[in-house]
Length: 452
Image 1 (tube, rainbow, N blue to C red):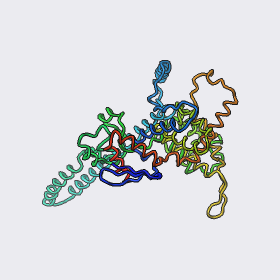
Image 2 (tube, rainbow, N blue to C red; image 1 turned 135 degrees about the vertical axis):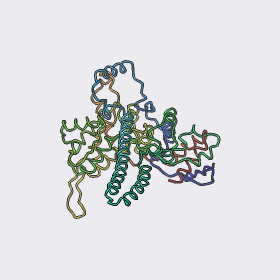
Image 3 (cartoon, one colour; image 1 turned 90 degrees about the vertical axis):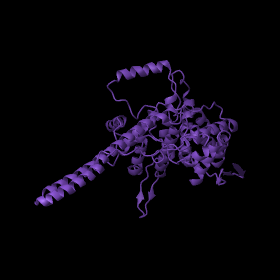
Image 4 (spheres, one colour; image 1 turned 60 degrees about the vertical axis):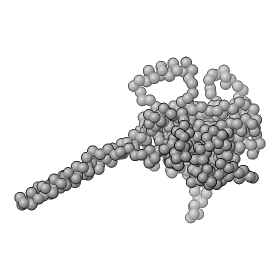
């Protein structure tokens, strides 16, 4: 496997001799394995190339955090006191758990639709047999009736064969959504070349089998599905469709009763459909409430100081370091942040008055990137408030941090597309790190990149 790097041109040659030139790609197009290695590469670069004046800690998945004994006892007490209450499915729980609950919700919906479709097919076939029977019994002649019965007998047998409760065979793994012939590095055996040729470029299965659960710590060689909570995506889509021209969106008050009702529906796992009948301000308040009530902020507590300290760097370094910090985020945080920043950028694009194609003035929503950062910044980036004593700091210091939080988010809104793009040089470092341990995996990844 040959590598050529000249003046920023990173070109690899696969084992088959095909040249692959690395180009900027969206982070969501990387495999789970590549994203994990990208975290390591970004972590190393941050320590070697930049001085943020603070310790940088790799964020952990929300579900993997260790609870103190006191927090465990408090959780048990709350569970006992809420035996008859519904366990929240979306609000005030770790982001990774929200994603898991949404997956379960989609699987139930898919299963229901499949069962309903099978019942409809069976019903249609049964109606066909009944109509044939009715037609046959109306024949007046015994001779004809005898002929019809013999015909009906063969017809019924055929119908029964085709309409028997027929459970479709499980689709081959390679054809299912998320099906893979090779899931991870550890699935490769000595006959690696043949297995690699059989790899399918599909997303990983959303419902892991028992065998897959046993190896859930192994990383997939394929891109992982987009991990954005249903409530976040629904709110963003609703406002993009109905609220971009709404003046003061996110600032104007909402109905607490209606927002609470929507929250309860999402928490019960109801298939909420936000349409034109829902108030834009209610939906906006629901989105803010979801982000505010997350146990761990979207930009994580571990990276709070690092993000704040980017404001002390030169302008060029600010963008580079912010991008590297984004690479450190868990996949669910990264994907949700991408969706949110894309949405906020769209809202900011409609902040000012403009004219349509007919020359009519369209009123802007007045929500610039600065206004949006002021509202969302404290919900997305804050540190753990473990005690009142810990936060008994001077108001001037708090004001400085608040200003920095706003500046960080405003910059992210303006450059969100760049933040989630992985440049060729970082991809090259990722492949180099994999080449040391798994050259066959690198060959597969190169061939996948060549087909994209």
